[in-house]
Image 1 (tube, rainbow, N blue to C red):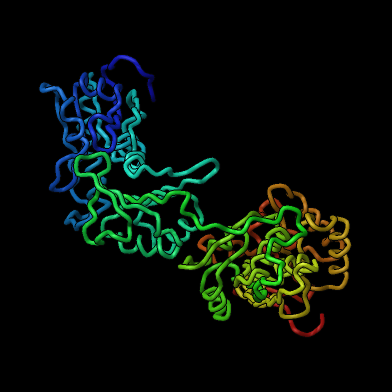
Image 2: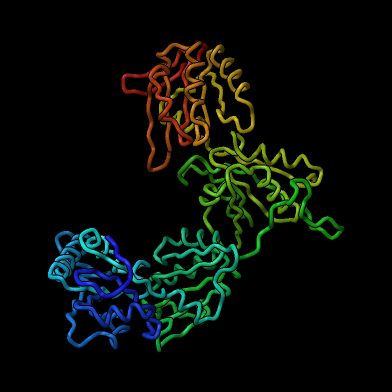
Length: 513
């Protein structure tokens, strides 16, 4: 339950942001609520005084009831039988009981929060517990990063720039990737993670121009280039500002889809070889050593965003991620870079030559402007191979591979090919069976195939194979639930000779059926 602004109401909980440190940055509303509260509550760390209380101390009435909510543990060890999670759960239960008693007695309770209550704030956990039982109002505060950007007098993001707030506790590789993919960024929660954060900034090409800010808006405020900071000295109240202006420039997409943006005069550098690589359908262990070595040597990676995200960020690597329906435009970006002498890899999930980027590259490279660019395709493990291996050996004999997507070909042609495969009694692997906009094609294909195949025909459904959500289902063509199939699935429709072992594994004999 939430309430609006107005007078301080009894039996109401207020989450009040007190800003980053300077008491003069407390809002007028926050000051009024603090001065009129019956109970002032605030969190404190082990062996530390509450910074939120320090900020608001001059506003706290002498006769107010104070509730210090002191954490039993932060990053150290605990002898609680439930470990860290158990100690924290018990702590929040006790805080709930203490504050609930005041609210039930008709008192006004103000919980102080550094910065903003809903921005990495301790207040959130009490809000989750109390707001469904008591009238609650949250008063926003100035977050620390706003004070930090003011301290360094550096614009953070402009116009359509994207701002990303990142905890420094992210794994180094993930932090580097996210820094490379955004315009402006704020990195919080430094402390012991500082050396890894600096490494991530260097890998993303964002170290230069990124200031470290300590105790923003406080009397002890200071800032300096991240590269000049002693990695062992960073306090808790510190963060890093990564202005959008520091993002390395990337090559813009071609405006017409035909003309190259690379230099064409006599001084132009020699074109570099363009690599098109398959990174497999899921986990890194399925990426070939050849592809790993290639990705470690290129200057640019181009591809559909989820695939680009799988490539570790490193120093000297620029990423060019885009959506799922601009394959030829993406290909031209890569070709332009290679034509300008840049080492480029275009990444595809699975194998680049199976419904992947390889054909889009050759389609775009048919333009005479790219005649000088050599192209090499490096194979990857395909989704059909992985699903088949998980199921047993359903593609042990002759088989066909089709996509049900009619984005690049008409459905009438898909039906014609489905009928031909069915009449030839081939095992059929189906990519792209359904999507949010294609909801009937699996059912249509099932109906067509049943005109030529027995309802008992073996069907394998592989979903998210190789990922945490992996599932594998062996069913029949007659029992297939078309409504359960989506873009994350790959289907294998068996031939007449495909069978299932007693243990549930599907296989197709190598001999003709």
